[in-house]
Image (cartoon, rainbow, N blue to C red; front, side, top):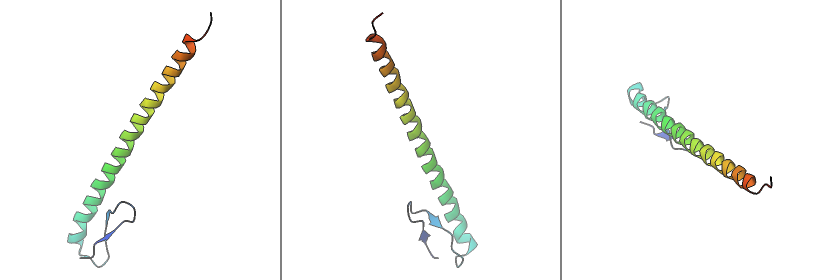
Length: 69
């Protein structure tokens, strides 16, 4: 079996010389790994967005407290 991998994440790639029975498991593994990478990215993005919203809220509060009425 030929064990080729993607350049950046090392995901398993099917190969024309491999038997289908060998590559089915590898393709399944690649999908599971891609799913995990997408989930990790989405989670990090949500955390980043939440932190940005909190920072903006605090900036508005600081500006409000420094205003003279």
